[in-house]
Image (tube, rainbow, N blue to C red; front, side, top):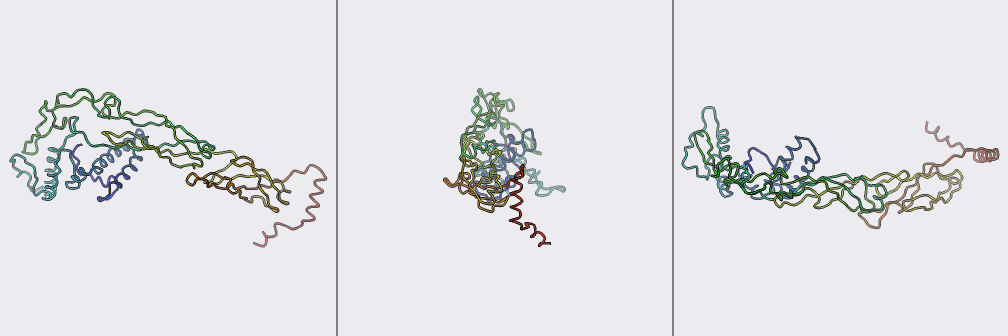
Length: 390
């Protein structure tokens, strides 16, 4: 990993400096789901943000790396933890426990146009260059966990109600079959940067340093980039995924499929797949949570005198009692005729029936006479209460 400078990894992940490992993990996963390239195709800003949070997670999730970062304010794989701790005890600018071969450091004293802060900044740039480097020959970094994936899955109304199997095709990253995630292939060859010596010369002001070659990491040899994955260690493939839907699954519910996300690298764990259910509608039934809503037409006689009528339910035909004097728009409850609750086995919602009185079209004189007689016997005006409220 290259030397990191002036980066607030805690701020990048949106956590406090004393955050626990679990808080770091949760913060990274939340941001990774938001900025992952699969979720933001062709978005360069999201891609850079994803790289930034991945770098922050790589440092802060590793106890040793995090300790060095907290002590120095930056990190390099080549820094000796003991030296970093000693340096932190001595304080910035007072002494560095590294042998520089007797070089004169007088050139780093603040001049007329310098201050102690800028002088330390220049010194830290050279200090970082000495310990930096991220070439193919460098020691392999620690495990990096794969990111989670999130997909929406359309499911028909009856599958969500009764449960069943569903299939979904996803795009996920897998370990490269050629290099097995190592990002390189073939036998190592001599590094052309240092000609196999493992060291290169770097100038820092009036000083000359022999430092580890940044291309090979000081090993003197490099490996060729894997042509299958182009050095990524991962390849993207389409994969069909089959998953089980419980009876009563609701629209918007998330199902976690462990280990079905993107593959990790260097032995890191595979991420998870989160499937968001998008339940379909029905031309007759309307679902609200575990309840089923239904409109049922009834006659004037049934509404006036009361009756038992057959109505459809998600389980088939059932009888509904219409009380005498039922009004149009009134709601009647059919208990436990709704959807099974997926979290509480055996519990079901209700079916809520809204009755709609259908006024008949009278086509014969006898029916009209009966209706006029009915009106004479029931002469109360249902609109009187409207005028009482004026």
